[in-house]
Length: 473
Ligand SMILES: [Zn+2]
Image (cartoon, rainbow, N blue to C red):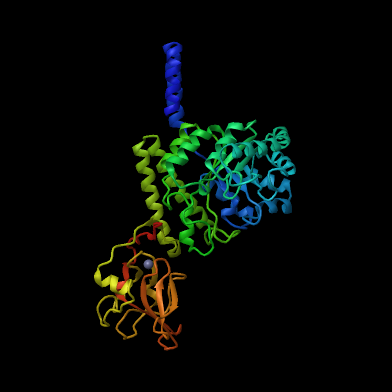
């Protein structure tokens, strides 16, 4: 606690030793007591019924829910359909606080009714976006931020009446698009009822820069999105690549960021977050799987926080817990394979010939051609799960043959020879072999003819390594 220690020293210089010790004791206590207060974003579950999401609040270590409207979620609209009193009863039933109403669509100047609804439901935070010119710097930016704050003042009066804070999220292509804009905003903020919802996703992915920003913004932050850019929230990316937005999956180190939140004594909400490429859809196939992903990130953040608090025992426990959970998730669902950002596995000359240069290994009974053990075949280059042993059959062609692939794992493309269909790993693009139809070997009438060398076999019960998503060039 750099700043606080300095404060304690100033205190020590001017007042008695006992007051100094009391202050020091208080700081030590703050240091060990610091925790993140988690709020669950309803839109992580797409348009799922809010009745189904409320039990997930406690399961994800949160005490509150953030209700998102369409297009990201539909839970805000669901309140209107079921009526406020029914929703208030549900909150009581599940012991959940309504932490936030997120409302970008209405914009920052049309939140009056929303603030009144928030007050009736005991909710103290509303998130919206800024309005104003973009692409400014220096003095011009400062005065544009000042103009925006000026326009907010009548709305802040309503916020104050209703005991609500309006938190403005930083966003690309917006007045509040830069760290500089955020600093001007914090400096000129006229009331505790106006605050910042900090989204690292929209800022440079530099942990130290973000940590310094948090120290500059201090108590101006009301909502912190535990959310990194990863590869972005783009529909064309694979689900695994989209999940690189989650803490612990992409490359951003959250330890310095949590150290900064810890140092400023952050009291606001923390929301573990990502946007799916297709807005309004859940980030995973089932409600339980969404919560698992959130908990995986929460374990990672727990580890970071234990490092910050210099508590090695807690750090180790969080790490073990996280890896146990990772293994469980591998076993639960093959499609929920763990993902890490990094460099692909190194290939030897023979592997590179087949995988990178579309080579074909000689046919024969070697490799995995005759393998019948139960298990999973993964990509040699990136570990992506490709085939299940249940789909393997004996074709006597001299290469391993499968009549089905793991959904989405294999991409087909016309071979350079013009008539065969090449199959490649959907994640890394490595060459696997060819796929043939209509030969009548099995009921599915499909034969994936795969080079053994393009795969690695993991026997049932063995540990499937995480899929490697390549670092940005
Ligand atoms: Zn691959």
